[in-house]
Image (cartoon, rainbow, N blue to C red):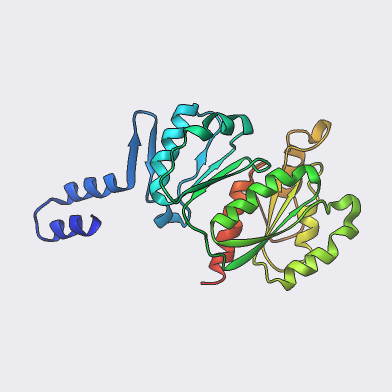
Length: 253
């Protein structure tokens, strides 16, 4: 279709403005009056449009998922167990597609094929309570073609737990490390002082008192004295997974 439009433009059968309008229509699919799906995002950014489930009506969410099936892989984030239970039987998938719900990460994956994983990233958490955010990062990186190696519950309260795992990940040639921590958010700084690869710090909303909500961890990571750290928003495992995967894939190109 794109070639046909460009050929008509070259032949003078349509104007530049008409060609622009037609090309834009190829990349946007409107769902009634509530959604405009960016069907060309994978070509531009390397990852297809991902659906953020929180705040969406169940009926609208089903229609959006159905509208993105054409990209052959659909990822829905921040999807609670209750919301998934409410929509799962209403999802009429084409033949060959399967759905997998990951309750810990609150992610739904729908696809008709496996992804080849060519590069590796590492995912580390300070505590067990940080695992849901880490799992979101892990699944996101895997959807972008990375093998994600994980080690959980190795925070600074027992820092000796960390060192052998860091060595193993470096031996496995991971290209980036996602480090997820709540409380005082110290672990990314420790890890960044031990490795020569990029570290993505993910503050979580795990903590007591002033640490609750994740702002203490966020400020600590932003104020890190260890160079080589990038920091994403609180509980943003998805953003960390995308960033880690882009770094890893760039290093192989």
